[in-house]
Image (cartoon, rainbow, N blue to C red):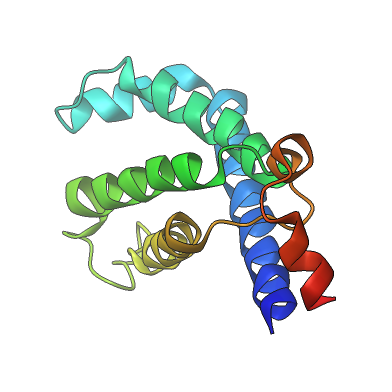
Length: 141
């Protein structure tokens, strides 16, 4: 049973990491200056666009390889809460035709919260380095 849970957590971890990595890369490819301007138009400091994009890229890679899963997932959860409250809530759950709603943000938030609570040890660099709970996997297999 434990191995099934770890396989599920691995799928969530790698998927969430890949999606955030892609979102961060797109922010730079599309012109980070545009994102800076968009942040400023919402009343947020423009430099935060760089921070968000870097968290998405570095955090995405960290999740994919399994480093600091709980910490990175907590940062992603905070990003999703901020994005939902500051931008998407006014647009509605499914959007308004011009902008997507917050349904995807809620899915990302749920994935991140799951990983904060449960972690993900299977095929993670952290597991290899620290060997935490290695006996659990021997018993579960």
